[in-house]
Length: 71
Image (cartoon, rainbow, N blue to C red; front, side, top):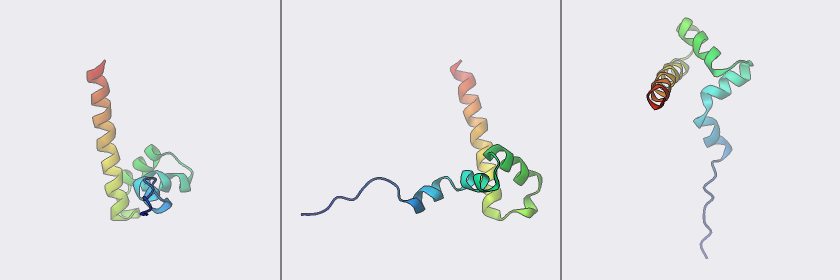
């Protein structure tokens, strides 16, 4: 018989998915605080973290617009 693969994400995939949040947790701050810190001084952070901060900023803005249209 063929064994079916589990659809649960493994630890490695899980951290990739939420790596910006995990970076914030390691520093002991929220993701919005990390975003503000990264965007204020992008030279202190690597390129990937800066891109993640910009993505979070965009997604929060889109989510807020979606909520405004719903109400």
